[in-house]
Length: 110
Length: 115
Image (tube, rainbow over all chains, first blue to last red; front, side):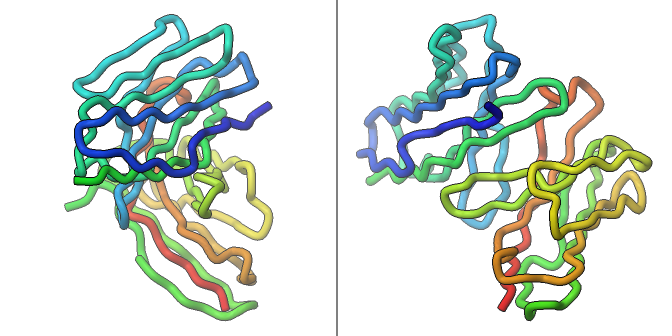
């Protein structure tokens, strides 16, 4: 129940395309859903986050869509750029519990 | 200068050796964390500390121990390293808001190889 499932494991997108990464959880106690971005040789860094009381949050080219009834949330990267090539982790948390998904390696081709 | 630093950045050791990984932060945060990252498994929590006198086990604490020497320093030890502890290790910090919603700030990682 503490797991967060994430797909796909890897994703290749052409420059200008839309990248979509999906996550699912089981524990309805989770009340915060961040996404972290990790470039090679670096630690993860917070990209965008959402609470379950909203269905969508947008920051620039990055959008989180949240479906509370399905217990799913996804990251959409519009107009994907080669500089977006990185590993993306979804996460879920409540109280002192913080769980990361296994990650998606995104490659954006020029 | 980086807000969260880890030393060493790379380490190769042999089975049975004792290893210490160190983390320092200049963000003034009370909360510090140690994670390990393995391909296909994401980040898994080893230990976390919400202040100098508070140490808690995470999901995968077996084979590891920690020491919170000061607010700014949190060390991870492998008392007797084994090959399946070969991984990328990250230290992270967060502030004093709600633990579940505070942003975690990660260090650059330590790549540990146990032969």
